[in-house]
Length: 533
Image (tube, rainbow, N blue to C red):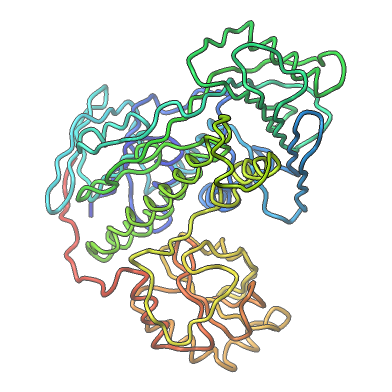
């Protein structure tokens, strides 16, 4: 069976390759560059808890060792603190990390994974599709033909894959611009991110009245100043003056000592590809969408693309083509990103002073600050992980279905579970293996050895129902789950989204939900013919 060809060796492409390998699917990553990413301290990403957990699963590395997990968030207007949030030590919080560090961790994990091959200096030149697979041609020092079962374009904003497939990429250009500086200095707070609107020291020049500060390891910070609309040039002299002015304002005195590490101008575009699938060719990450205004993060959505697509490609690779399941990738992910873009674009007039905010957040500037906080912290319409509520994979009219605190189609909470080997793990640790997860809520099981309850009560009947499901599934047990009554059963997709919650053991309903979650009855297909490269 031919590997999956992934075009682009950025975080999204490498994440997809490792996610496929975790499900025993080989992948070839075509890297246009020399095989490494140059350090850029000012190019960073804020990862929400779900995407941070995804990278930790795939790399086997705690991101806290390489980035900074925020201890809190503070929003200020002029000299007044308008909101302050503290994260408890065991509470999920955003992680701020340099993008080249993310890529380095993923590359190191890929180097140790025999199912992943990274081909450096391989620039995509052409794609040919057949009923049995895909052929890609690359030019450069390692130019050759590559044969694959599927091909995924993770090759960024100017995606060659998207252009070769003649897929339109409409949207808006430069909806926001930020001057960016990474520097090492000492600020009055530690490991806490700050959004400061209308600071009292702001002066004239090509800077708007908003600055954010996000902590990085080793006493470093990333500072972003929102620029007004237009193309005003940000000279090094202007940026240094604003750095000194901002640092002095935050420390209520003279400018503290600082070491400037990197600078840049970050321009946010909003674009959405018309199609994310063309036969055996798919788009993911910046090749499929661009977003990032109002504190939202584009890399987060790209990683979710990879997580969503990996288990569906793995199912098709192992069991034969299943069009309904593969089509659901575009239906689910494009709908979520489109909703995020709509919410952000609706809120932008208020931020730009157009007066449109009153139609979204009634009242005041304080409501505007809350909206921005949602975007930065990954909450609400601007930032929360999307739910696949209208997914074609959602089951219909299940007998015994009950509501829990997680809406159907939304990511599940990371509760502690007992695995089949008796070990205690987080629910997210069992994701991404290509199997459905069946979670029984059974109070008391956490204090008894598994051997005492595995053959008691409803367990034998549930275990038999899980064995009979139309897709491989793993049975887990939890003491509790938010909003779920005792003896309820939750069905979870391989990417961690809730399929349904049922009251009690209902084999017929569980089977129907599992069948729907994998796109209906699995087609009996013939494996992709072996090819050569």
